[in-house]
Amino acid sequence: MTTVRLLVGTKKGAFILTSDGKRGDWKVTGPHFPGWEIYHIKGSSIEPNRIFASQSTGWFGQFIQRSDDGGETWESVGRDFSYNGTPGDHLWFDGSSRPWQFTRVWHMEPSLTDVDTVFAGVEDAALFKSVDAGQSWTELDGLRNTKSSSAWQPGAGGMGLHTIVVDPSDPDRMFVAISAAGVFGTTDGGGGWKVLTKGLRSEFMEDPDADVGHCVHRIAMHPGRPERLYMQKHWDVMRSDDSGANWHEVSGNLPTDFGFVIGAHPRNEETVYVIPITSDTEHFPVGGSLKVFRSTVGGDEWQPLTRGLPQVNCYVNVLRGAMSIDSLDPCGIYFGTTGGQVYVSSDEGESWEAVVRDLPAVLSVEVQSF
Amino acid sequence: MVEVILPTQIRMIAQLKPKVCVKVADGATLNTLLDGLEADYPALRGALRDPSSRRRRPFIRFFIAGEDFSNENPDSPLPISVVDQSEPVVIVGAIAGG
Image 1 (cartoon, rainbow over the protein chains, first blue to last red):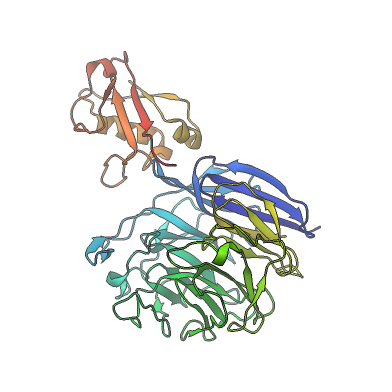
Image 2: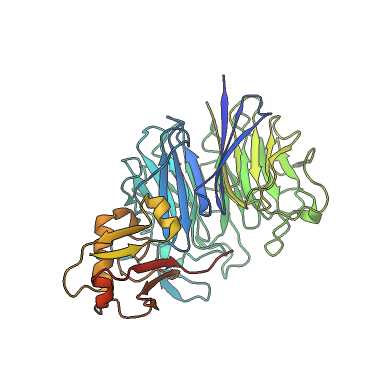
């Protein structure tokens, strides 16, 4: 029997929601780590019961937790995220330079091929790797040492490496997204990196077409066609058909192209989902009406999906890590809000149901099916 | 030995009792006490101080003999009442957050 497990990170702990393949009835456990911010919690695709969680508070800093039994029990593992060498400087909000300083882990990405290997994306932006299931961490400093890094700058949420995407057909090919720097790609497992921002344009920058400085909110890869990447930028929904070498805008008829999340359908490479948010100063759905938008033609033409979603008086946000899509047929789509709801669609977005309504603000949602 | 009382949240994560005892040498300071605490309980390394600068984390406070020691020189000797175990060192998380 298929098990579907949702791993939900919130401002005040982690929650685990479990169902069967019908995705109708859900068992909720938690809070795990009550009171702690869980920026991200994600399980291994090789061994689903191995789960990593990024746990932090302003009091005690960063911890990493690992479970080997599907979240029943947890072990605190390594948390030394020391940058290699003497970190250089990056831009600050006022245009001055400021040295790199570790703040937190935004993203945990278990390897697709080795159960003991896991990547961590951190703020200030850098990529770390563990080959001993999280006990120790080594920076892949080829990324931070790209010649553009002195021009990286924080977005409003900090200068976080918040998205790690691994090509399932070639695990040495990875993409990361950094706010506010851009997208970077490696073909050798994290040794060398290229800036992949050609085609991005950000009006808030002195040079809107500069190589770096773009506030990329999220990228998603189509698993069956890994050269197809989708992006929700600060403003603009973008697509690349050549592994990030070139990007073009596919915002089309969206009511606003500001937003945080973006997700690709597991099989249909032309189908993609976004949740538009009004603007960079109004972080809630347009007109208080929560809508997921789906394109079935690779962007540009979008249809709203609203059945089961609140259409009046809804002023929540959906943060960048808070949407996930499973690989079942039909696929399930899941997202969490800053109002504490987790919405589930088990029919590719046609209808939605809030399976929990009153969690702390949701920071991340990841789905496992096994 | 010095008695140290730990904040609730951190002892839950580190799976420690509320009060631990740390062996210190003559002339112990807050820094050498914390060095010993972190050596005995590695899970606390980085949770109370920055691991490289040894600077107190902003929302961590140290109370010694009823006084807030947080902004005192961490390399000055601990009071005798702490070293002779008549009073503990109390580590607390400051009121903050929402």
